Amino acid sequence: MGTENWYSPFAAGGQQNTRQSEVSQSTFAEIGMERSGPSLGAAGPNRRFVQRVSVLAWTVAATVSISLFLRLPTVVLTLNVLGSPMSIRISETTVIAVFIALLTASGTERAIRTHPLFAGDPLGHEPENGGHTWLFWGLPAAVSILAVLMAPVVTTPLFQAGTALLSGGLIAIILFNLYATADRESSGYRQARILLNVLSYTAALALFLLVYQTRTRSLLSGSLIAATAALLAVELLRDITPRVNVVLSYAAVVALVLGEAAWALNYWPLSGASGGLVLLLIFYLFVGLARHALHEGHLSRKLVLEYSAFAILALVLIVLIGPGL
Figure 1 (cartoon, rainbow, N blue to C red):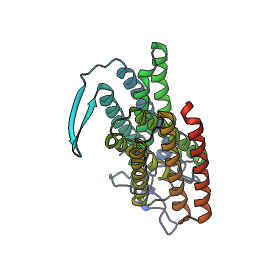
Figure 2 (figure 1 turned 180 degrees about the vertical axis):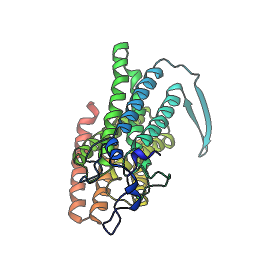
Figure 3 (figure 1 turned 45 degrees about the horizontal axis):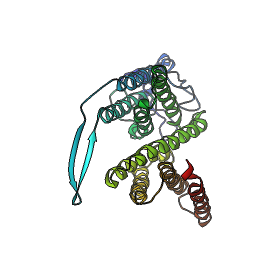
Figure 4 (figure 1 turned 120 degrees about the horizontal axis):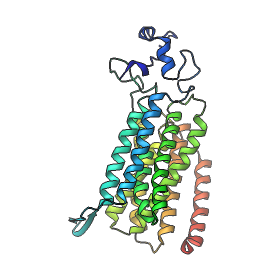
């Protein structure tokens, strides 16, 4: 990692690390920071971050466009699971979705690594916060997969081009907001966090609807929904506590609950829209409870009653309105 993006944090005693004196003031100017700024993210993204986001956004847009014309033979895998056969279709859409998810995760990693909190030092050592940049992968990967799945729905070439460009632009917006939430002391943290929360719940709903409407075997659909819930739960919980193992534990619980709920809902005569909304409701409730538990350290009886009342009201509305969707 080059020295133009190195930041050495203050020592516990209030004095700067001695290695920081080796970095010139012009070096800090290159990355858009001041030596004594109020927070690491106050000056905004640096030039290297902007360049990497631009490359990733255009790459995602190009990949979505290519997915509309790529034709690969469909491979059907037949497995014997729990005493009954199960078929898994691997089409060009599946291949492109996996590819673009890995591509987006890699691009997100390179972009977030330019943030002073995650840049490390000139010797290649990990930053003091552990450098857990993989916590930022979930939302960009989920949105890129969603773009590949939704692109074939659009039929006219003009709208297909617009969908590809929109997907790249959305990835860029997400990455800029992820950068803003890397440092809780940055001036735009609160606004960025709200937008990321909205996008995370929207992506969850869209993916839940797409998976639930397929009506595939519960083992497959439940696993896909659980994986989606885990990715997005990590994004929604990652900045509440620095304890990564705790975040992963709560995200795993959310994923397990969503997987079990999808398994149970497959036996109910619900429409695709109703099933997706019920899954979103469960996801929202458990992520909300997890956020409060991580933030406050415990769950009060009043909070549980409030969430329970909200869940009952939402379920009634879904049962009454859902069949007409």
